[in-house]
Amino acid sequence: MTYKQLIAMASLTAVLLSFIGAAQADSDKITNPDNNHSYQRFDTLVTWEAARTACASLSGHLATSTSASENTWINTNMASGIAVWLGGTDAAKEGTWQWLTGEAWSYQNWASGEPNNAGGGENFLMMNFPGKTAGSWNDYGGPGNNSTKTVAYLCEWDSAYTCDKDCPAPFVKNEFWTTKYGPAAANIVLSKSNFLACSSPSYALCYYSGPPSSDPNVQSLPCTVSPTDPSVADCRCPVESGASYVDINSIRNTEAYIETIRTCGITGALCKNMENEKSGTALLTAPVCDYLQASADGTPMEPKSEVISTFSTVQISGYHLGQTDCATPATYAGCMTASCTYELDANNNKTGFAQCKCPLYTGPYQVGQNRASCDAGSGYVWSAAFAPNPVQLSAPTPKNK
Image 1 (cartoon, rainbow, N blue to C red):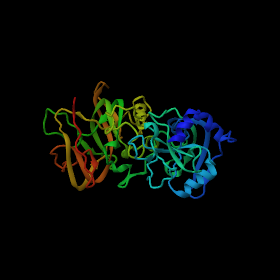
Image 2 (image 1 turned 135 degrees about the vertical axis):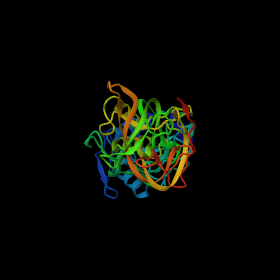
Image 3 (image 1 turned 30 degrees about the vertical axis):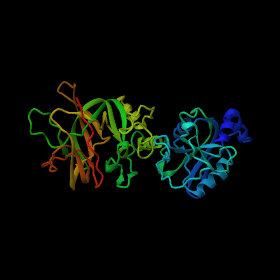
């Protein structure tokens, strides 16, 4: 648009500084009585990415404006006509806007002619562009459109997604409903973007675990109900290294989950995942990947864990990567991000396997092997994923080990 082009030629930074005027200091943290959320404006001029990181470091997130009343309150009490970043982006898919928190994009207040993706890459949400109606929105400052563009920013804190540094360490069980099917215990993948791509020096691969193989030449990977804790299964899983995937809906560590959805969005679409990892574009790494690394370095993501169970397409000899749907509800082990310890031989050397404590769930499930019998046999359970119809994913292409 013409106004933007004129602004760019006249030094946008200077214009925004003059637009801010007398607001020299950060605002106080103020609570909105309508939703009991707290907000604070920071007048340091930063990029959208830097603003997102700054809010997350304070255990908050870039503010969302999900209703007309909230938008009015934000502009009146926090922005006061000042240009600020909000937590909206269409970086994952041009024209498809979403909030970092995963809240529904059901309300919008675009300025006239916006969003227009000027310059071919305005991927971030800004309120109060100079010269526009107070409280209105503008798309601004992404790749191809000078990603160094800077404005002030607004952070938000709310009870549903807040876990500050006072949270009990190192583990608080995630009780959030991560999908409409229930809390993190649901252990469900709804789309390929849910599979966050990580790399770790070690991870446990429980995808093939279940009843023992009848072939004496195949390594046995049994899953049995724990004799000491009937809420979990003891599963033997091979230990691998390198690329793996974490289901964003099944992160059992509360703080790891909160940090991850702030960065990646509820579906994981804003971070490197199974769906976009080969796109060739620079993608964010999910915070949960840092937790996997920390577990490998001796700071456990789960209680008493030495290694964490994730997913990969590594092919284990004697097992067949695929899927078997078991529609009749039964007990199964949900091993995603489960706590594991290394299996040791008589000389205390690692055997290349881990013993994992996988929570037990009951429901329809999907086994990660072709032509598997849904009946695991007496005393055994399958390591599986919750699979309510009509949710189904095609099996990934295996990588031979």
